Image (cartoon, rainbow over all chains, first blue to last red; front, side):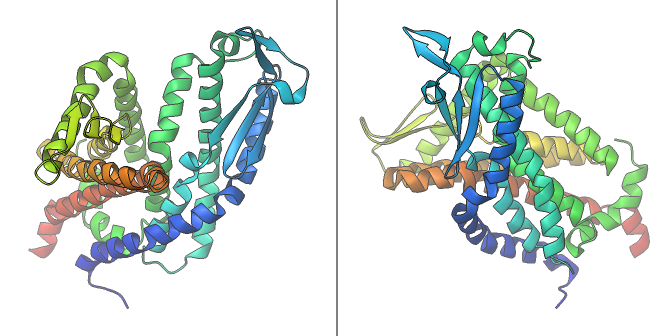
Length: 210
Length: 168
């Protein structure tokens, strides 16, 4: 049943709040499976980008474990050839993948004709951002723990320390909640909710000065 | 839409980078975060006199459970998103300013609810605290920003010249 225009926002809010907890609960249950491809790709990227430092990135539940080729002996970082002797870091992938349940709650709370197809494409668009988020978390861990040994590798194209820090903050603090909203807004421009607010201001807004 | 996205992303990245500067953190963000801790403590104290607030820390009495309000927990990033969206959407400067001020208050009001709720949840169960703190509340705060922005767009649509002509 279609609601009057002024009720679309209320209906959307009711459904979002009703769906938020179930979506997050489902995601908590499946989050390890959902990040498997992301961790595999993070391994490919980092082990090829920093072959002298990154040994492997593998999955342990919903965490990504980064094992390095460096060990600490008497306070000094030294290369190690033994795979299990390198220093390792654990990264919680959920801090970048909770964009999925948030997007799901927004998506399924919005009145539309077709749900599953658009949801699939929306999640597909989210994945590169989750990958970027995990890579930025691991880059931050490498920078914080190895300092100049990591930042000043000869022959390796390195982002600056400030770039790594800001990218990390951006990917942890903003991207997981902002990108789902942008995808949702882009997919639902023609939904009764957004058409109701955008439709009547689109024409004057196009002519207005910024 | 393309113009909106470009302006939105430009303003967002500029403000976010500015916020991350250590001078801005020291001069603006940390005092503001401390103010949030004091406001939260002031709201809790009539009901729970054991609560202490110092710097950006809230604590259940000496030696009790404490939370420190850090970057990402002070609602500044959510406010930056709102400011970027409002500035990117064509409207009068008066409407934009009103949206930013009222939106800031709406975001911070919910953020204080977040701080107080996390303070009590953390004292009760740390696993649930982590889950709610890291995943659920950030989504709720950004949802608050989205709602504020949609309400702002509804306000603009009701006061758009084109709509008034159509009604007339």
